[in-house]
Amino acid sequence: MKIDRSAVLTLATPAIPGGLLQAQSLVEAGQELIEHADLAARNAAIIRRHHDALNSGDIRAAVQFFAEDTQNHGVPVGRKACYAC
Image (cartoon, rainbow, N blue to C red; front, side, top):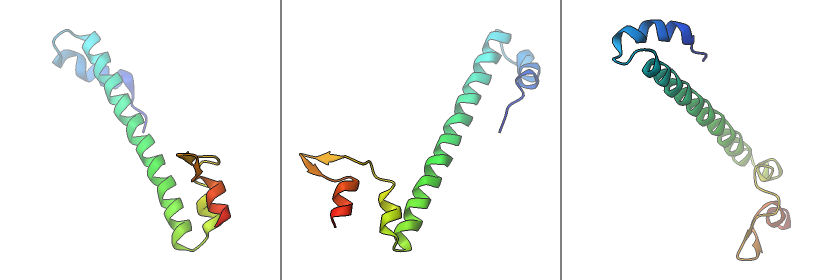
């Protein structure tokens, strides 16, 4: 969702003490919230695809969501460990 900066500034400036500077800060804060929500939505979509692959029994597709060479105390736990199964 794109915010029309000029419309927000026009509406917000008279109501905010300090005027335009604070209105711009509000617009930037609003834009940051929107970007955060978009990132959260993209992350949720990735998790859903991973769960769908697991639930359908497609282990090879599910493994693609793991890092290739992750290790835990020297033991492979990424894709390499999953392909060894």
